[in-house]
Length: 407
Ligand code: GLU
Image 1 (cartoon, protein in one colour):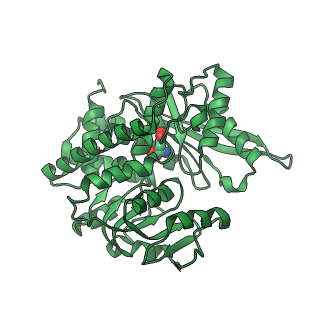
Image 2 (cartoon, rainbow, N blue to C red):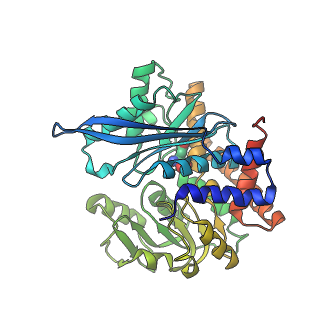
Image 3 (tube, helix red, strand yellow):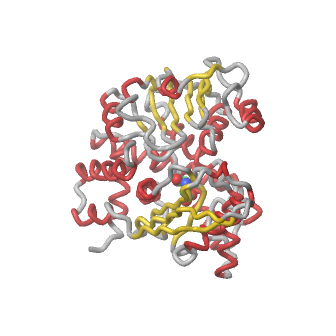
């Protein structure tokens, strides 16, 4: 398994090889400002006590408070959290929001916990890190397996400890608890704005065949948004496997089916396929919307998509990037394609600080404008430098971050 932090550093070095940052800046950005680990005890329903490994990495705050989600996953470890925190630093700069980068996590499969245990664990994460987070210090948010309900518990725990009831310490809260309109679908919606901005430029048809790996928050919302816009979702997957229907999956029905059965597998009219087959399907757009290290040296040469749009963080390894670039398959990188989530998080934070509530129309108008502008920047720069979109996005981000670092 590739170490995601090494991949993230490799991406940084590749961008630096073109733009030549000051060597001191490259050194600074190759290390997180702080990584904090905590052992958090939780009383389980059966009366036993369990200790969980928890993390918060505060990567860089040159452009504003640290910002980034909290992941609950059995494979989460410090290297993953460091990689995700570096990507947050780059991502916030790519979309030009006044925030730095951080990330948190707990090594746990939350599906194995009861709701009471999950709430205790979420509140315990806040107690462990309360001193280092805050509306002007570090603002967590949802990530893989963490929901608006969890953000609500966390925000509530923070206000119990500090007395701060602004809600500005956590984003991704439910709307009735200070959350922003549109935050739930923002990652997928932002990705769609990126896609629409470049669809014709990369010679994609008005109606595309789309393959989506992952049917969680990002993947399922992407399936809804793309299919509503007239595109055809031919295949998708979850942790239990992948399904294909070349005539197109009915996304509304699939969502209902998954809610009841717990998986996309067995959906009427679809055929079960392997993940390898999913990645090798002929399609216009392939959207990885699950975890890191999915497109690698092993499968990059089998990909038959005309374009890849990364809604997941870190799905493509640097070696796979090289293969895809040589094959002329554009990869729209995570730090741009999935930045809609943190952008609407930034709107939520702003609304909480000003005690405002913006309409969904206002949120999406602002989001669309920002995604369009920064997508154009990334594409233009890539053309000028004759490089790939990831290097281009990193270069734009690094130039912005550099301005705020005094040596
Ligand atoms: N977890 C999301 C990401 O990776 C959102 C982070 C946030 O909203 O702060 O971009």
